[in-house]
Image (cartoon, rainbow, N blue to C red; front, side, top):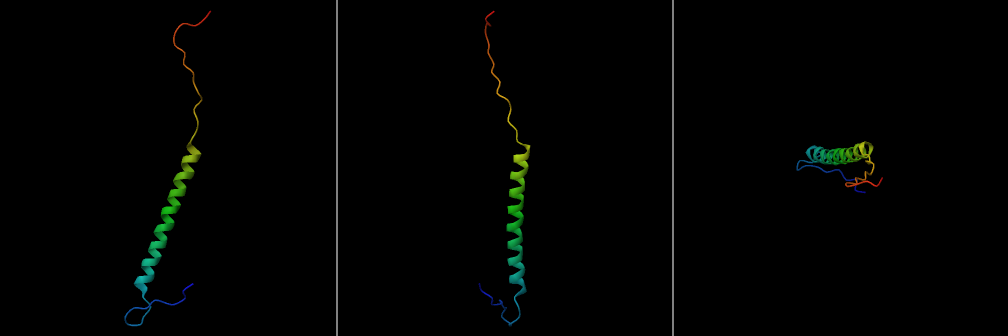
Length: 61
C-alpha cells in the first residue's frame, strides 16, 4: 500500500488529484449499484408462462 501523499508543484496536497480519484470511485460504485439493482428488479419481476398446447383440427369423439 502506498501511503505517500500526492503533492502539487508547490508542495501542497494535490486536492484536485484526490477529488478526481474520489469521483472515479464514486462513479464506479454508482455504476455497479445500478447494474445490481437492475438485475435484482429483473429477477423479482420475471415469471414463466405456462406451456400451452394448441391442437388444431378434428378432435376424436
